[in-house]
Image (cartoon, rainbow, N blue to C red; front, side, top):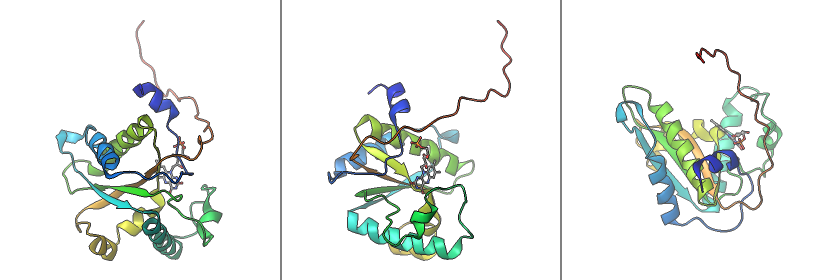
Length: 189
Ligand SMILES: Cc1cc2nc3c(=O)[nH]c(=O)nc-3n(C[C@H](O)[C@H](O)[C@H](O)COP(=O)(O)O)c2cc1C
């Protein structure tokens, strides 16, 4: 797929089919992520991969419980707030694969670099016929020292962005994008 098509076609995917993501596909996505630019070419990222719908369902429950217990009335803007309180809601949208982009300690802007890697991963997923959805909601849970220790994430790494990937069950509905606000345009004709 042409990159420009992927940019316009990628949508947050929240309905996945039963098709299973293979290890090879997960590695291809990670390799695409690592082609992102980074400050001083530090490449300050690492990846934690979790596979299997049951595993993700369990992690969803734990992350929801943590967030609902620790966050003040959740961001009122989020239309999914009622779902988060629903015991049956899976924050990982029943996907079978979760890739958490981890920021390694680095001098400049490791988390920003990881977000560039994240966009690469999501565009690559789109180009490969997969859907993806960032799940920022679960980042605080991944950053709990006890959770990192349990999962094998080095203590000094920071979960920058969890992203679910899988094969879409349907084409996600269109999302309205505002036209760009050009705050300043100094351009001699
Ligand atoms: C940092 C970040 C965190 C996000 N967290 C969540 C989340 O926890 N759950 C979710 O379903 N979508 C999440 N999203 C997806 C956004 O809701 C989605 O990107 C937005 O509605 C625009 O839709 P689009 O991605 O289809 O353009 C997140 C996106 C970003 C960039």
